[in-house]
Image (cartoon, rainbow, N blue to C red; front, side, top):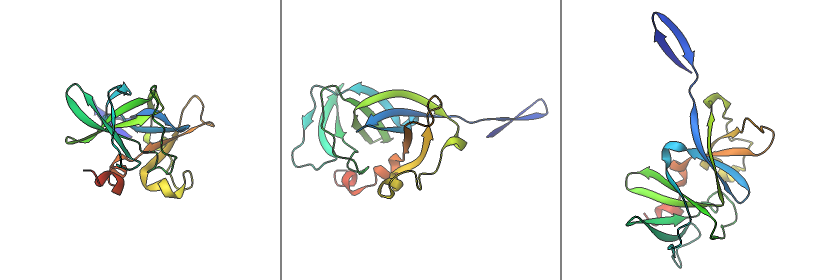
Length: 166
């Protein structure tokens, strides 16, 4: 909570975080909206990269810039994604020179949540992916259903799979 001081009075204002929500192999994930640069359909002109491993799947040209197309499923302990024509790409900016297109099954829009509502991942996610999940939140409309795993992109981008090509 943030404190606002106005006219000699102080009041608490709840801070709100926003996530870009997406689906990958039937699970819901969220990333900080600040990291989401753009959402687009899978470009028809993407080019597969042979022998580049399970994460780096190819490259694509977007308005004259070339971006890597990545599948984070293997990092998250999921089956590598079969890339389909109706998939979506979230262009994610980690650093000014580190922009990648993450291929996902569906994009579900934006969700706001209060930081105290985020649960720590320990015990809520498989231990193998705990380093890549900063927390778990539940959608206010359906809290008992699908948890949303909030990804820690900084740790995902530090994996050997990413660093091998950057």
